[in-house]
Length: 349
Image 1 (cartoon, one colour):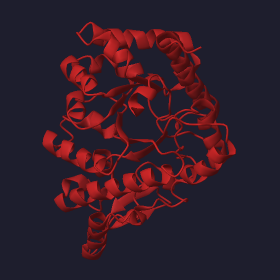
Image 2 (tube, one colour; image 1 turned 90 degrees about the vertical axis):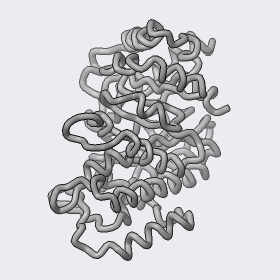
Image 3 (cartoon, one colour; image 1 turned 30 degrees about the vertical axis):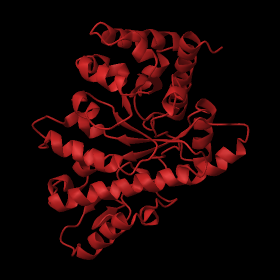
Image 4 (cartoon, one colour; image 1 turned 135 degrees about the vertical axis):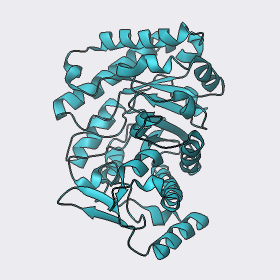
């Protein structure tokens, strides 16, 4: 099973600060040769903003490149574009959901970079797509109302992102037959707050719609605190979270974590900071911090063996906000932590 082959492998969350797609791919392949991901390059262009990147062909979407704003113009007649989207969805027309090179230069460059490293034989290739909750709460209409609060657009959005995920997976499978697609949900950190009016069942339904387009392993990433029981109640295979800052929050849900691991789920421990704190940490200090995070769950009754058999290592979030030297150090630290854990628990050396 693919899951067992991912044990203690490192990978990236997505974004890097490099503007050059080739350099961005090289950095990822250097540090994560067994589970590489195509790099998102938000500093290259506003088109690579995580919300803009997957916005192409969404009904009514408008980009203001000068002001760097994305919105949906609800005053337009959206009947025709909505009909096109639903037709593509019903016919499984993945070409409709293609992401243009201008929107994802790292994804466009990735195949060439991988071929150039012909000695590499990845276990799987990772991709990522912005999640429906985060996209729907960030992108607003002209009245500044999040599109997720519009029933028609929310329904369309989930199907739109499902197609984006499925198209991406199809493209990545041309490079490697096994894939891992993460759904990035930073706004899940706001779930349950007074500022976000969403029901648990609605969030699960939105995520499951997107997951439905993914044939390989599906992950979800949240870089803040959230109701982890909600995410663990979905069909997700890999839970990715900011372990560096929020390890204790996952330990509040030991029963859900135990059940998740029992059904074959994995935890991607985001142990490397996404801040300048990378200069203060070492592989050894982060390994210690990771063991402390694991111990929090063990003390709540989650079997240590189950955790050690189903773990991966990542940065706590994308490193696109860092300067290049700090970002590259974060990736190197992540790879270093994974190497230590594989040596210690898998006997690799």
